Amino acid sequence: MDLLVVGIGELATPLGGRPLGGRAQGRLLILREAYVLVREGRIAAVGTGSPPRFEGPVLHCEGRCVTPGLVDPHTHAVFAGNRVQEFLARARGERYTGGGILTTVRATRAASEEELVQLAAPRLGRMLAQGVTTVEVKSGYGLTLADELKMLRAVRRLAEALPLTLVPTFMGAHAFPPEVPREEYVRLLVEEMLPAVAAEGLARFCDVFCDRGFYTVEEARRILEAARRLGLGLKVHADELAPVGAAELAAELRATSAEHLLHVSPEGIRALAEAGTVAVLLPGTAFLLEEPYPPARPLIEAGVPVALGTDFNPGSCPLASLPFAMSLAILKLKMSPEEVLTAATLNAAAALGLAQEVGSLEAGKKADLVVWDAATFAEIPYWMGQNLAWAVVKEGRVVLPAGGR
Ligand code: NIG
Ligand code: FE
Image 1 (cartoon, rainbow, N blue to C red):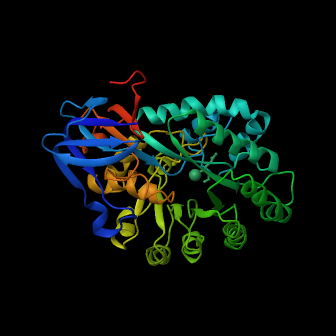
Image 2: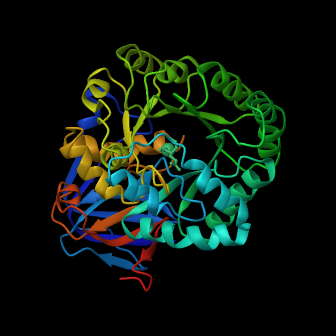
Image 3: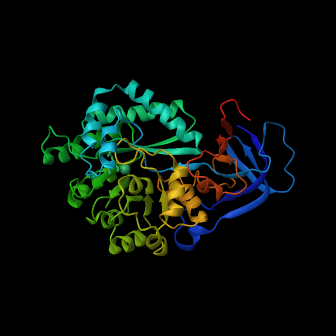
């Protein structure tokens, strides 16, 4: 797709093909009166002043602000059923322990692949409508070989059907299935499930819930090392419920990302910085569970590249809005608007191994961008809970609003 985007009042983007940590996370390129030229779905030029001569579709932004398409690097968006009762019980003061995951496992096992696709498509559509053009989706509500494959095949079908880049992550190690002894399930993960997932090319990453009451550091190491031998990238749900040393494990294994980190230790922070592992922070979860927020400032100051995601799932975090997570990052994580934009674009792309492809507006990258009904990018988190996405461009095609602009 070719496209010329003109009349951009403010263009705001991080730069480069690598995650940005420390001071660099807060450095953006800001252009006024800018244009973006797209050839065959990729950015051919970004500039200011009068745009080049162009025969083809033109998107007039009329002074609005443009950023890269947002990237949500952590969701559990494929599932069946819901947990409204658990949500209400928590509001009455009950504490989240992760036990409700098995409620969703029962519902997801009972659903067909087609039903999972039908349930997830509108959820992902609502994310797209809020300016998200790349979404990671984890399995982990099947916990049998057949049901995990069913979830990942649903993700593959959704990726074919929707104008979104979906990144599938195998998370069979999300909980323990009640019908299988624990030792036996870890063996199944390593010897049967991971090889089957890899053979079908169904996942790009493997993630393990390494936390109190879930997988131990030793179990997680065994599973992740097996995943690495099969060519999968590594992610860790790390220290969400308690400081168990999961961030240290992510660093030791040179994982692409360590996620959640509500209870990461100072040693964990140092280890992540040294390893260059991206910290994926999910403030919506802390907000909904009324737990302490992850230590974004110490992470950034230690040089760890920080990314932001929603953690959208039916239990701990029914929040699917990345812009709302950006608002929480300003208010609760004390990040600057510049750091927040990098976290929700380039660093989130890096958490998915896609920093060379998406996450910034510069020649050569995929033409994924959002026109916001705002004069400046700081308004995206400021107008809380509102949807300012005015147009979404995916690989050079105007996909929102559906009829084009
Ligand atoms: O990221 N931490 C583990 N998993 C999810 C919660 C899943 C659920 O409650 O269904 C999370 O918070
Ligand atoms: Fe999660």
